[in-house]
Image (tube, rainbow, N blue to C red; front, side, top):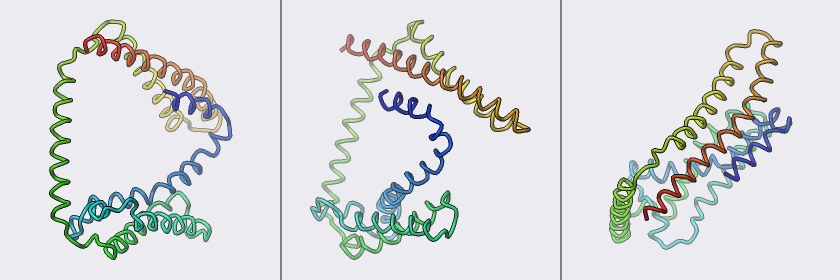
Length: 220
């Protein structure tokens, strides 16, 4: 809720509208290497015979190959941007593949290519116990009565309607603006009504969620 309100306030400033795409691109570039490392660890390693969670089985508090790969990925991505090799909108693609290659190499050099039968056995047992616990929570949650009151349904309807109207105005601005004048008019309408719908959505969605929490607390 707090993050949503903060984003609404920030979005009111023209600087955000004009620079949001570059800001998101550069901010996303900071986490692209992290996603590449996670992908390599969970999807690639089992296919090439490497051990998933190898650093955990070695009792490492911090995985130096992951940290080094993240840093090198940032240097690579922002280096391409400084050299103006390609549009910064596509920098995440080579950065992602570069980080995967670097992390796979460094992890292999540090023990990911080895087997840890005892550690894997403990990990499997832990995952099984977690799965049982989650199944228990899901069963208990299904037994809790949902808030089916008319007022809560109205709140949810208003929240979804606000989202739907915002989406409709955004699509209208994108595809139904044949000239600059109509585009500016559609854009201004989107800014004004979209802002009001965003506020309305957060209020009604939070209210409905709060009512459901209150009902669950009463049942417990």
